[in-house]
Image (cartoon, rainbow, N blue to C red; front, side, top):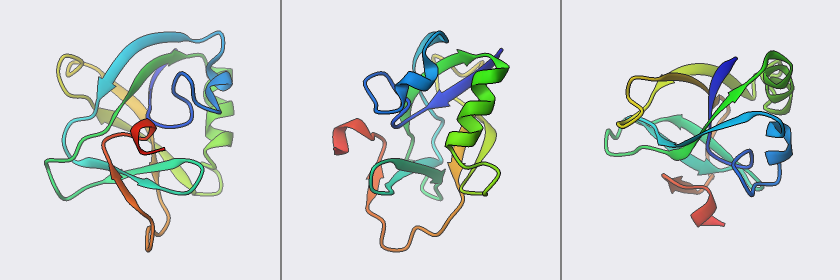
Length: 121
């Protein structure tokens, strides 16, 4: 099982949440400072931020290997749209290192969202 941090359409109530059906919800979480969200239209992209005041809110899920493969496909890992990378979380989840998807492409002209995807829709 792999712990994955999701912050957009994979979260509960999101259009792609069905990918996490039959997986275990661990709870809400927040990244350590150093990450922020941008709108990519129908979904967000999380990137590293030089502003240490930015952090991203999301959820932690425990997923099996077949689901992780489906998520990698959805996120375009092979096409280098996103990279799955380990990150550290803020307290109270600070002891956990989780995997998440970091957006890899150009953000020119994309609206900055900050910490939350849902509140920006």
